[in-house]
Length: 104
Image (cartoon, rainbow, N blue to C red; front, side):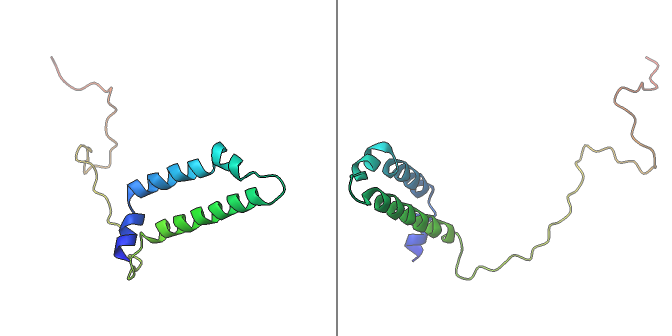
């Protein structure tokens, strides 16, 4: 089961499923199934559609482990950035265009 879970969660497998899905629902293969006088196209499309949903369900469930439990980790508050001008006074910081008292 671990091997199947590894295959289903691989990025290459996701790309493969996308490409195969584009091919089987594309013009050449759909036109082959469109035989007049029967429900061949209907059976073809809904069978492949159901198979694709089953594969996507397997991909979605492969990310969960058997003993997966919800995390109870609480987020920690973020510290202010080091460049923040934190003064102990209750004054707002000066605007960036304010003149400094420099006599030069």
